[in-house]
Amino acid sequence: MAGFWFQQALLPGGWAEGVRVVEQGGVIASVTIGTAPEPTDERHVIALPGLPNLHSHAFQRGMAGLAERRGPGEDSFWTWREVMYRFAHRIGPDEMQAIAAMAFVEMLEGGFTRVGEFHYIHQDVDGRPYADPAEMGARLAQAAAETGIALTLLPVLYQYGGFGGQAPGPGQKRFINSIDGFTRVVEASRAALSTLPDGVVGVAPHSLRAVTPDSLSHVPALAAGGPIHIHIAEQVKEVADCHAWCGQRPVAWLFDHMAVDGQWCLVHATQMDAAETAKLAASGAVAGLCPITEANLGDGIFNGRDYLAAGGLFGIGSDSNVLIDAAEELRSLEYAQRLAHRARNVLGRADTPSTGRALFDGALTGGARALGQKDVGLSVGAAADFLTLDATQPSLTARRGDALLDGFIFAGQRMVDGVWRRGRRVVSGGRHIVRDAVAARYRLALGTILS
Image (cartoon, rainbow, N blue to C red):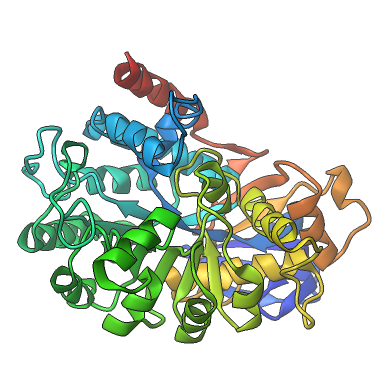
């Protein structure tokens, strides 16, 4: 049992002062407001709940910065994808674990305490299955165990190379599975996460271009009540190709053919029309937004203003992991809206005028739903997952309540001082406690891959 006392803490009901939290067995046993610290309590100034990172491809952390060279023609998402395919084909299980551990260290240092791994490298480099169908997923689980981050593993169903069941290309051979093969991957993934604290397994049909309607119909049963994630409407070409295939836009087709509800997370959705935006907002599904990656890949800008005005839920993800920082994702989300609408504080609400608070609350609530996290925040019964800010940061001077979130998200860099997962401190002074060892293995892995 451990006690923590915070001068200010963001609770589910709002900011409170003199907050004492008692953790037992990794779970919050009690929360007391307006109290003095006990002699043995750890004392901190500012506490926030840890944020969910709802969409990550951990292995892509290893290629960060490698695709920033212009080719002979016009660069796009599709040319970036070819670089990613080449990188993915050089990764073995040891390299996967080393790269994922580095990504998870940086996620925790940046304020994320749970990650949703949209995981599609299932086969060996020759396209044949590993002896353990979840060999690569198990390596992600081991990286999560080492670093302490909570893991929602989302094995990806990937069968085809384009809409209408087009044959996959050679760059996709490590991703491809039949329904029977994918079922084995999901079952083995559940076994791999069975001993991981707070581990969750969902499923992820990669995209409408990578599965057929028949394949997609199997997904809800395979999910067994867990999260269902899908890439959708990320690129203009994707929307055009979908329309050529079926006469509909991707989001419209999905809602007409699947029972999309709060179990679902639609990742990116940067190319929706007004009707699709309204449908997604009303469904209870979560929009999985990855503003840094969406900017890096030239995806476009999510229709955040209208979506949130209609009551839509959202969460944030680090996706390609080209840069990992929770505050930067939230800041990028708002700034994209400001550029699109030539306005300020676009995602603030009448009942929550602080844009920082509106963004933080939205990402916490929507991200938790998308990742199957039952209890959220600094509340009794929830996992003791929280972070503290460095109160000596100039941009936090003389601020209280929501002004702290505005300073954290919009006015500073790397303000996270400490992070606790299930009551165990994993980040101290802004550095993960195993950073040095993880970084050494990461460098060796990248040396092997890039040599």
